[in-house]
Amino acid sequence: MRASTRGRDVVIDVVDDGPGIPAAERARIFDRFEQGTNRTTTGGQTGGGTGLGLAIARWAAGLHGGTLDAVAPTPPSTGATLRLVLPVDGPPPARSDGAA
Image (tube, rainbow, N blue to C red):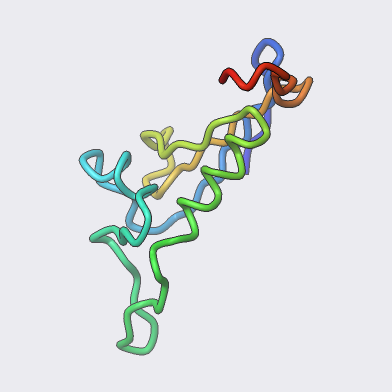
């Protein structure tokens, strides 16, 4: 994991040393019920995920005014890199007039 600041944002990169996420899949892995093609196996069994974890994590980041994305790994890493960006000041205040 790496953390830094960028302007008024905190940037947290979570990096693993697995097979990585192909560039073509980086956007869709955040869709509900989606599972990437590079899923790992343990004891001959593919992980039992439902494909909801990253969708929920991205939704939660958005509630806090942030973003969650899969980005290209930074060498020497070749695994998956997920980048969470959160504003230091928190989410923008809710509008009282109902507009987004």
